[in-house]
Length: 376
Image (cartoon, rainbow, N blue to C red; front, side):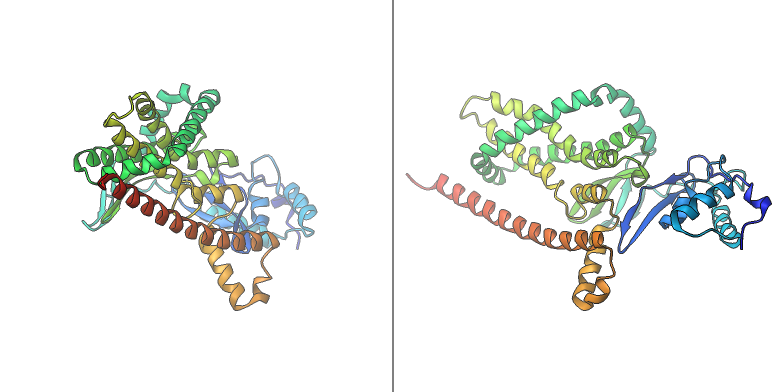
């Protein structure tokens, strides 16, 4: 059935500010995320629905959109199809001129959970706070400045890699000296705070919004977190990657002054041991965050780069299906099969390499520490 002439001339529009994501692979399907930034409600739609929704701009009639849809997908939409789509959007209050959006959700309590496990919101209005910090730091966010800082970080890591043996001995020494160990731990904790604020500042720089900055703990582990509300809806892939990578970059920037101090010390200065251990641990903190395993930032970056959502669970589900029913697994698109199988193999290799590296570093540190205290 064709759409009635009166309805064909209707020019519906999405409410201003509605967010639509780029295409994302989710299991065997390609989806787009639709989000109402006022209410925070979000849902998924398929490519055909996205084709229609993304063209509801108030300038095109339903007839014009229907013609384009027919050319793209080989079939015309009937009245019932339009009614279902517009009813869905109207029910979710996403259409301009319809019912007003739901009131924003009131912020939850500052703290949830208990002493063993929970979260604590540390910033009352994270979006406003990161906006102020962004305005203050905006001159330093020029690409030329960031490029120079990145080169400085890479040079620092090159020097530290060449000095890895001595730094491991410094770390072994630090483990047996509580006072400098506490100082290094405090500085590394400060670095994690800067890490999370860097995510928020980067989000503001590329047009994102920050929902919350706080502390999450599951004793004995306690970590900071930053929630960027709409990073999945940023149109440019490089903007998404920049938000995800900003934390590790901030960790490395935090180390640069200590690196300058370390290189300026005279040989044999005892302060060099503390700084060497700090530089080793701080570099590990930053670089490990770039490993593409959940819940690290590198995992988020890989998902953005591949345009995949839920990479690890979807990959795990595909591998289990492949082992159980290869014919069913063959129903996945070729791109999905390559990505999920490749990630399953790659993540297993990364875990094995990490275990080997930790074992080798522990063995080296122990043997180096033992030899340093043996009689001559």
